[in-house]
Image 1 (cartoon, helix red, strand yellow):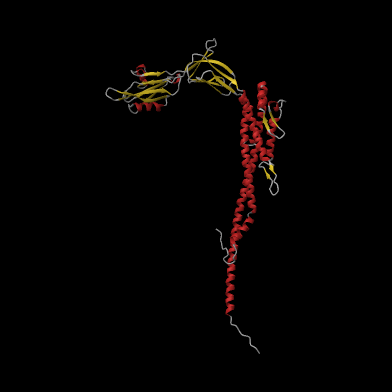
Image 2: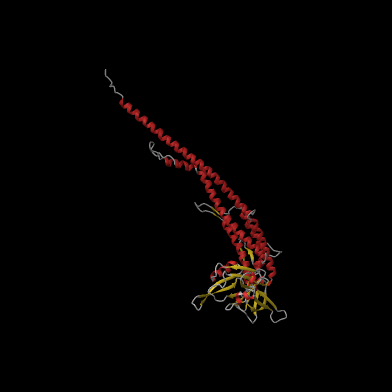
Length: 458
């Protein structure tokens, strides 16, 4: 803490005087701070721009592969049959008959007050014939269910109340359900160890027990009733890739054929293309807005945009515009509704694009993917996280901010030392003035005590 001796002797406001001197001394440091703040704002805007450019590169890669224009819609003549599309789907129409739904194998044991064996040892057998011995900690139905669940053998056991016996004791059953549907989820449970496995120890064969549901695969038929009839099964009710890129899920048996179809969705294709072009247009507009300079009037200063004078951003803007508007295989993008006006504004005429797509889908797809490839290349050239031009620009700006920060730290040390020097100087001044004042008072008092001699007359 500095020494404050305001006005003790001199009457000066020493603190304000030192602060005023320090304000002058700190001018270079404050200029550096303002410069660093400006560069931080530029870095923030460049980073936001770079993030948008990376997202554009990802979208452009998808568009360049043709996936953006591979838009299809799925239909089904029954609510019990749903169709989901994935990449690779193509237009088709066909009938299917649903013969059977997938079922989870389910067994219920006979009612009992407790498990009939002590200790309760069971052997689990799956559809592949693999065996696993399980021993419960006690004969309670709850402990037996807990042991089966802990085995992790694809069987879920739960205890179900089954009334009371003649003596009023509560009865319970175990309900055993396969974790997975289909034939591969089928299982058997036997009383005893592996050596006791047999038909007479199968718990489902005991009096009062039953197999409630036999594990079965779902089954559908394609082209039913024709020489090409084909039966297809699935362990679940979803038939993955029943056709390339087409998944079909069934929820009820149908004796009548259900018609499923996949058709090209022209509206979705146009929307996908328009969204991509609008994303590029939005990026160009952001660059334009950030590059504008507002000329002040009167006493107002001219305000520069955050990208004004930035050659890297200007080159990026020019490269993106060229990637969109240059011809593809000799044809202008404006022929499919994609154009840039004389003010540099990118637009897409969706009506014209849709008409061109309907007239010659292959040509439009080729032109669109060609544009997307150029946009992808440009976006990656500038936004690559390792050697992108815009990335390098951000790194350079950040290095300048770091350098300014180091210089400001050194300035802070110098300013602190300067303040300490000024405080010591003014403290000594007050001390010296105090000493001089004391000497003056002493001399005045001494002079006052000197004898006075009258002057004689002759």
